[in-house]
Amino acid sequence: MSCKYVLTTLDFQVDKDAKFMRNKPWPFWETWKCIFGRDRATGGGVEDIPVATARVRSQVVGGSQCGESAYQPSFEEFIIDDSNNVPQEPATQNNSSDNSDKYTSTTKTGSLKRKNETNDADLMHFLSNLHADTNNRLEVIAARIGYEFDLGKARQEVFEKLGEVNGLTLDQRYELCDILGDKSQRLEVFMGMPSHARLGYVMRLIHQNQKAD
Image (cartoon, rainbow, N blue to C red; front, top):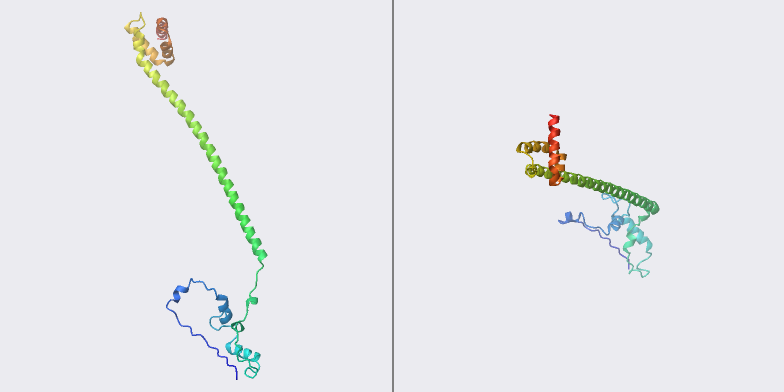
């Protein structure tokens, strides 16, 4: 009884859903390359079916006479392991390169972070000083506004205060309004004096003004 090995070929037909397989995973791609080769057109680099058949038959001596009719060739016998032909790059070099890239990236990130922190600190210091200077200027402006307000109010009240000084004529009060209104320091002194001392002070101002004229 002779051994018969029937090798059939697969008929590949175009599938209407083939376009959806572009991004699908191919878990058996390496096995596919071993069977059909890397060249899509010729399948070069793999063993042809007739050669594989002859090789298998040569391994079987007197199949029917030796009682080995039950022998079936395994699928691995038709596969040529070409994994040894693929050059392997040393992993150490890749690991060192990866570690170098990681170290460089970490160093750059740390430098940028420290630079940003320094810039932020300088900016906050500048804003703090600017805020302090602004507050000081606002305080000066507020004090100046308050002083001008008080001085304006005193000018409005000076005629009334001069009316409380006994011994002054109406013309003298007019003249003193001009004198005290032009000299804010004298107006402050007059407003701060007690009532009994104001007559002598204003009479002195009148005499000085007449001498200057």
